[in-house]
Image 1 (cartoon, rainbow, N blue to C red):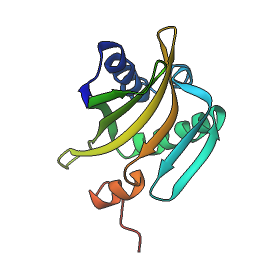
Image 2: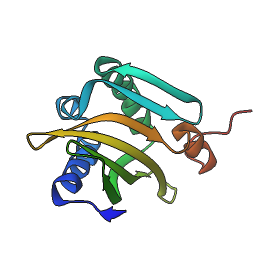
Image 3: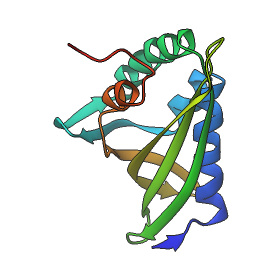
Image 4: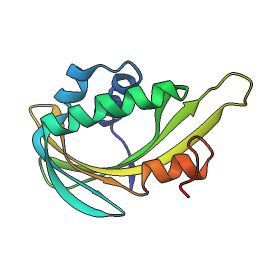
Length: 145
């Protein structure tokens, strides 16, 4: 895998900043009208509006648990023809609660971007692990029991 081009790296830097700022318009602009999500429980096609609705609710939930910082790192890519790039990125969520040490939760994802006229859109997103389980494993959320 090659290191990401500056345009792809900037796309994912904006991806991280938009989530930290809860910038719904920017988030919406980064997804195709319909895209595929895949994870440990399978794959599904999702419309952009469903992505945004779930995102808003999840971000408010995470903010209540001390999530303040969200960063993208280790972005790498492989070209997939003229209009596609496959990108593997690691995102780090930082949770800070009063009277507790900060907890960083790193999650890996793979994306396929459709790029036309210099504009990238996410058409496929693969979460390598269940995000909510990762939060439980690292002590951000209570264990299910």
